[in-house]
Picture 1 (cartoon, one colour):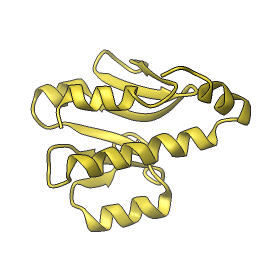
Picture 2 (tube, helix red, strand yellow):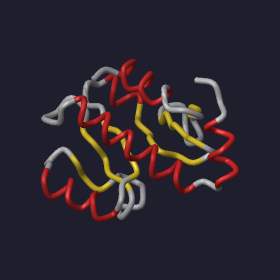
Picture 3 (cartoon, rainbow, N blue to C red):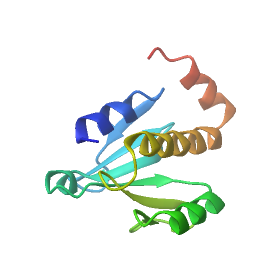
Picture 4 (cartoon, rainbow, N blue to C red):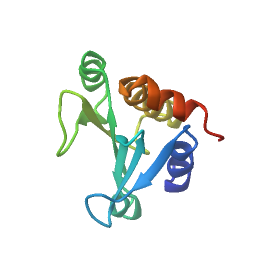
Amino acid sequence: MNLETYYEYCLSKKGTTEHFPFDQDTLVFKVGGKMFALSSLLQWENGAPKVNLKCNPDYAQELRAQYDDVQPAFHMSKVHWNTIAINSDLPDQFVKELIDDSYELVFKSLTKKIQSEILQLEN
């Protein structure tokens, strides 16, 4: 997966916005004002991209036990966030599924009003 594919896939999610709230390097994708994916642009440029994604705590533990390329997230709640190594042994489709899971977890945590507003948006 390249940066453009990652970027376009995240932005294809309904109601997604992009931000740089921490610094000029860390690209953050949000839905309803809440983060669901973040990544260092410098890591992509250096050929070692990683993405932090929100995850159900039990599933996060399963993934970490099953895949070396899934680790507790750096500088994030290690209960709810994983760091995923991109272009590793994990297939791109699986990474997309993890992005989907993260987006859905965050979307479902939003108020019904915000969910409804997002669902009414044009893609």
